[in-house]
Length: 111
Image (cartoon, rainbow, N blue to C red; front, side):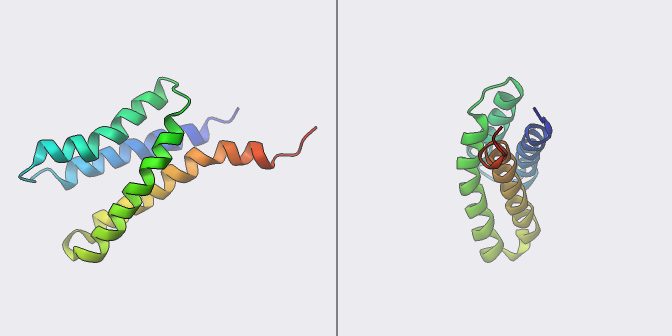
């Protein structure tokens, strides 16, 4: 089995966690932002690394919210637009990496 999508998923989740740490480093509600934004992708990255099979599914479900947050932030906050665009890209990468193994299985030729 190809491990590339799992590795990409792991790196994208860690990238999102790192992005949120940097993005909200000076926020007056720092702890809340870390619990809401940083903890979920970090926990899912750890779960994926430990072999939890549903981590990809839950990561892609949460990535829909991360994508939406990125779009809203890019649209309404020009001062952090580049961070929001990175968030959008990482969220799409999470969805793609989590979905690729299932898509390969679904559309592979049957023997």
